[in-house]
Image (tube, rainbow, N blue to C red; front, side, top):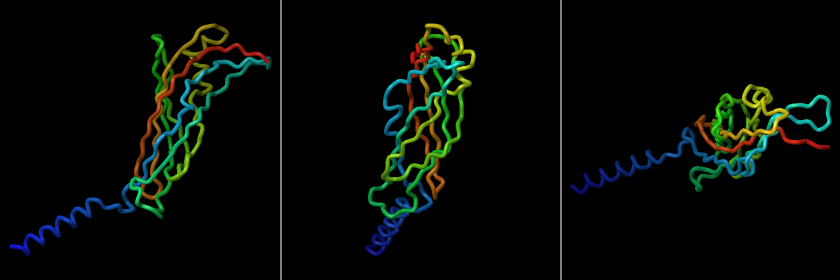
Length: 182
């Protein structure tokens, strides 16, 4: 009976080790967004007019800081120490009670995030087409403002395991035709 109990305990211990396996095929990196547009709302000028002929529309790029760490702090020397952010989606929601919003947009990217380091990148939040479209174009030359929230979802994978990673962040965006002076 004692041999049977010892054998049972040994089998359970082996199963526990297999269940906690840190095999190279499993994802081992935790990625997070440390900072998204420096934690501030975006002030988006729908048309830049600073005396240039003609005025122009500028896209809005915002900074994002990613960090990564190992899933298990005791794992060192792994070859799986990078995550690549391959795309992001921007979904718009009107927050000022008005109607009309910008179209959802998918963007490709190649942002490499290394374990133990901060990775700073810029993403294109508002495109020229967004500003020249029917929702924002009426603001040009006027005094109105439109407020929206941009929900951004980043999709990436751990290099070496192909384990998918998904991160999300949001930012408020205020659109207006700012007064520009030289």
